[in-house]
Amino acid sequence: MTLEDIELFKRQIINCAVLLKKAGFDGVEVMAGVGGIMNRFLSLATNDRTDQYGGSLENRAKLTLEVLRGIKEACGEDYTVLVRWSPVEYVEGGVSEPEESFDFARMLDEAGCDLHNLAIGWHETSIPLTIKDVPDGHWSWVSEKIKQVAKAPVATAYRETDPYVMERILQEGKADLIAGLRYNIAYPAFAKKVMEGRQDEINRCVGCCRCLDDVLGRG
Image (cartoon, rainbow, N blue to C red; front, top):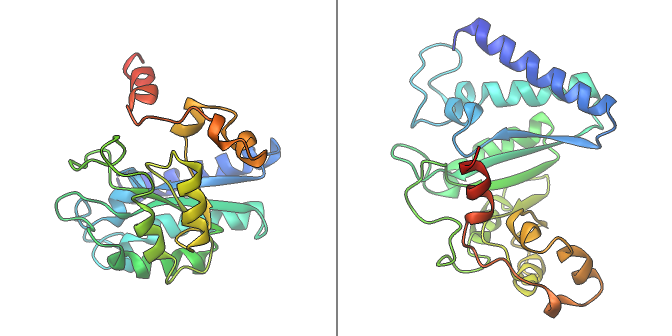
């Protein structure tokens, strides 16, 4: 991307946030993980730029931070902005331990991030992330690490299907929030049943990974 491309990219995202606020949305989420554009700027695995957007962590993080600050400036400091990012990437040359992401977590806090919504790995990652062989709640060890340095609340996701495991993660302080999608697709009344104390009636996600993949695969 040229510097002009980058400026256009930032303007488009910020404008999208403004439109969403006007439409009545309570907040927006910035996608800076799983190998997306902002993640590819951030990661040493993919960023070989030699200008102000390459090299040091400060430079590689610049695009994400400029987007975050730009949304806050355009929508107001009190407008909620979540950031979904990958503290572990599991791609060759990328981040493999959460501690390597501590400085970036601090940068996000300083830029106004209201919640760290943690994704695990990239789409190109070769290790299992969400299949049924991964134990329920396994990835909360990553959010537990990020919580050591993050000021904003931290959400864990990936392989969250059991409400009892979710509750234990929260009680043990490994995360402030459970973020997920597949378990809600498997049983849309999941949250309602938990609130009513009817957890044992829930049809839990089995981690087959077909719900999203089949839809996307069919276009």
